[in-house]
Length: 424
Image 1 (cartoon, rainbow, N blue to C red):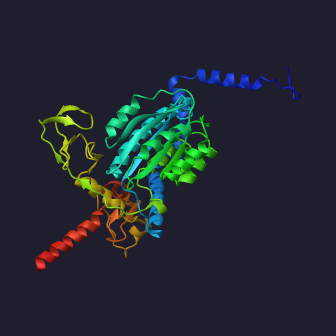
Image 2 (cartoon, helix red, strand yellow):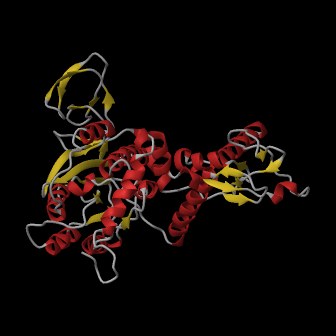
Image 3 (tube, rainbow, N blue to C red):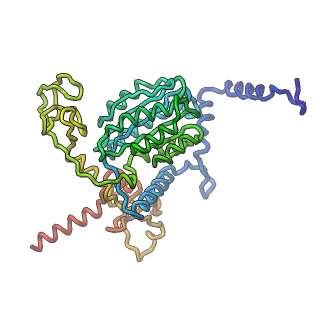
């Protein structure tokens, strides 16, 4: 039967079948190139030749843009940050997570980047703890309790990646609210929800649950893998979190890693507290004792609580016997850089290298590699605004994201101290 335009109603189906047949005639290697669209990663240079895109420069420009925005936000006002965070990552394992719009599937992409996020989180927040919650078949389940071991969280997640049923946002919020209500007042309570579904199957009024989370001082953030949802946006607005929708895998990676650094504390809850902490001693390798974490006898190195002498397996944690927060001194030292971050370096225009009046160094002060491209053409570089040392792009990222100290400034302080000692 034909419609008014004389075109068969099932013509769209026939066209789809033709496209499937066309793709079915391609070999496996041809389908790979068709799916990846590798020709989009090429650009034409000034001589008309095709060259690959300079992804390194693009990544660095995005990184510097993000660094400048964070720096401007920090310097605009004295922002208090939560260095002791208690974060639950809620992962949607409903049937929507098995969709294949992200390659190879949404849940595969989520698992890959959640693993990277957990490692990055503990690297930047050594005093904090993470727990995992999953949503499946309309039920929220606690996969792992709050803890400071990235390996235990990753291992538990990789064994539970089956997707089925509907998603229930309210059940997940009720579950994490019950756990986070037990957190001490100095801890910053956070929830990061990775949501794949376009609906939520709730047993009650989710608006009441959102107000309960707000009253409990829980900061809720959502990263969607489908379209924007009003209820997710409303949840983030009410609790002071952020809401984003991932466009592709690289965008999803960028969004989830933005939650690794400690966020600004909520104004009305940013109260200074003195926290009692213990620095446990490491037990001998061959010692045997009952672990308070696993409630069983274990042989090997552990840590002894300085107050009650109970044994724990990992740091940081809270003693199960006396409730004392147990940390190590390197954990405190690694948390220090969030309070006094390094200012973004200034970009050095390539024309400055050609100016004889500017006596700029030709090698990176960090890795000692040349800052000039083949043919003595100046490349992209940055300069510390304090010590005026130049660095390459890789060292710029390493200094700001891993080292958190400028080698040029540190060497200047060291040389100044040496000269002072010689004068005395």
